[in-house]
Image 1 (cartoon, rainbow over the protein chains, first blue to last red):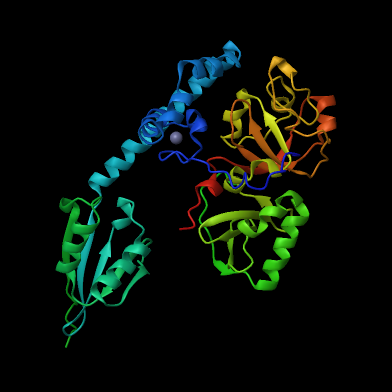
Image 2: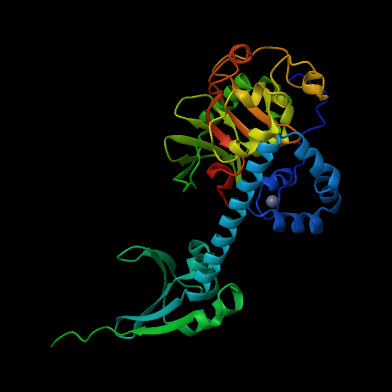
Length: 190
Length: 196
Ligand SMILES: [Zn+2]
């Protein structure tokens, strides 16, 4: 640790992979190498050329014993399979998940709108709650749901507006997966 | 240390007196950072403290993690900080075969450092028939408890940071056993933590 003489050499700029987040030279150890390579080729072609050249690949292999190579290869395959199944699962979850927009009567003609299920589409519901609040200039907060999970509660009857806003702004949520429901307050007996 | 995904706890502002103390501690532990400390931890900017599981504290500037600490143990630099200031820490190198173990959170073992592809202080540049940068890994043997950054054979950027469990002189003698206590590696929960 002796070579810190010139003080202009830092901070060093480091590129991180847009797919797996590691420095691209480490992508080979993750389960998403194929996608990582495509990303690098598109975004940093010269680095891609360096890291994925035939020469580089051969050099990488030559430092490992044959047995270690085999083990590493098996390991890589396992990882790739795991990543693929995780991706498939996430996709399936997306396809079957529902977003519920619920109109709830609080008092006579006073409503709140509850929105559930956005997190299944990779959205940060705290942020979405903030977006709702800003867009509709109303109270909007994240509240716990009895039985686990969280929902966004927006003051006012905004079901239709929220529906449109979600479809418009959060492209990861397919319109078909949004459901509108009404939660009428049960008439108090007597 | 961070094998699982982390759900960050409460974030709080570090008082300016505490901020000064942390800065002093950083410089005490990593004197070579001195010329850059104002870039890393500007005096006028607010440092945040984020509580992580298992009594780990993380110090961050906005969304940039800087140092973390288990209880009152030494402050450890986050790998993104190491990547920006790579040569200002004690460094060792593992051979290529050890990389995938390190990245899966396994304990770093001595043979990964003593093998031909590994590097310890004072290793001759032509060890294993490969050319290494002269002096890159120093000449001073490191004691147990030293914070070390672990680089990897054939890679430019470091992949691990942790505390030495065994001194480097002893490693050369025994050539086996655990090298580092749990630390922070590329792709672990601390790496993936989003401070948004
Ligand atoms: Zn990658």
